[in-house]
Amino acid sequence: MEAVKSINLVKVYHSKETVEALKSVNISIGKGELFTLLGPNGAGKTTFLRIISTQLLLTEGEAYVFGYNVTTQPEEVRKHIAVVPQDVATYGNFTPWEYCYYFSLLRGISKRRVAEKAEKALKAVELWDLRNRPCATLSGGEKRRAIIASVLVSDVEVLMLDEPTSGLDAIARRNVWAVLRDMVEQGKTIVLTTHIMEEAEMVSDRLAIIHKGMVVAEGTPDQIKGLAKERFRVVVEGNLENLGLTENNNHTVKFGSKHIIYVKNEDEAIELVGKALKKGLKAETAPVTLEDAFVGLVGGETD
Amino acid sequence: MNLKVLKDVLVITALKSIPDLKRQPLMIFLIGLISSLPLYFIVVFGGQVSYGLIGAMVSTVSFIGMSAAIQDISWDRYVKIREMIIAMPVHPISYAMGIALAPLVLSAPSLIFFGAIAMLLGGLTLASLFWAAIALILCWATVSSIGFLISTYLIKASPYTLNSIANILGIALGFIPPVYYPEEMLGSFSWISAIFPTSNAASLIRAYSGSLDLPFEMVIARWLILIVTMVVFAFITAAKARWREP
Image (cartoon, rainbow over all chains, first blue to last red; front, side, top):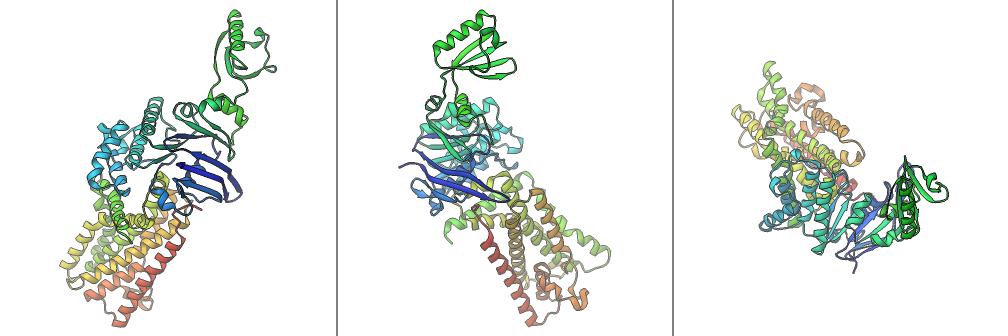
């Protein structure tokens, strides 16, 4: 049985204008998998997460968590999930310990086991030494980790995290990634949304690219990268005309004096780097990134 | 209502009061201080202090009922803690009750202080304590329900707007109707006192303490008004409030 499954999921918001946020989304997430929803702002990632976490009603279709219908059996679903919403803030007067303590009690964990579980969760997010400091005195990354600890302590099977590292510095972000991968090693299922490509590539077992409410690609990060038309990218700094290339006859992206030239294979990439170096230009090559594939799939547009 | 629902009420009450109490212990005096401000004028202008003390008790429960139901819920929405709680096996009733009860815990010292002084001055009798407690609880429940209803309808309003609304309504309900002053001062309009849950509760407490002469039928009628108002607002709130967004 899948941990999370959506069948032809549709969500329409009716406010001043009608917005179709999700258009027949079909996603299956296996148990013990870290699945990422990747997409530009407004793509529908948060809407999907809010529906499967029983916060938002769907318009059409079905969604299940461990076989429980999110529309008709929300109480059952809630026993299996924990959520970290996007841009979640903390109560300034709460300490990380109090977050873990009270949230575990609400989860129905006995007082006897709370201390042990809170210690484990706080150590996992490296907040044990700061456990008694009010959140108002913690950094942004520490606050976010306090919230994540309050979710980890719950011991539920599915964790749903909406852009959990948004706004964090690189070190704090990597700490969070490490915690997430540890949770997956322990058999938890994680559903993550992000628009950070590196994050999606580093932590995901599988991912889906959502664009304008539709899944435009789904697979492992390597499979998604394989969907790019070209396999290699060459970054050249300087004038391309010296290489006999123009921006029109190659798939080229320009950032000031830097150009990314996409080529079909490694031989072509090495040849191009060689040419560039001979002309005294700076050049390097690498396989295409997830971001390259993503931009290719969503057509360079954002909502 | 199962045991988990009741247990969660206590947990939410604790989480909404204990950390605040630990880190800002002076806040327990704050609500009492606001409610006791009119007492200063009563003392200066020669009014009955015992009347004012009952007014301060009623105004305290009214103010905290309104502010908790509006400010706490809007703040929880703003910091998105509410979203985390919705996705937990927590009943909405536990959440609402916990939120409403927490400030009652924080204001208990003020209530006890006002009650004790009122008893010393003869404005509250030992025999009337039970009825005073019931009237205060009903007043708090009614005003909290009104607050929850407002926060249900103003779901898109900013926390700052909702804070202002809560403060205006809290002050209006506590200070405009005859809560701190005798309803007889309104003359032929003294019936207005029965309309507002705050002044109605204050008059009932005074009637049981012997400082307001109300016929027995009128006492019954006032209890009924207080109970019906509470039930109506609680019912509308329960019907309109949505735990899950549509």
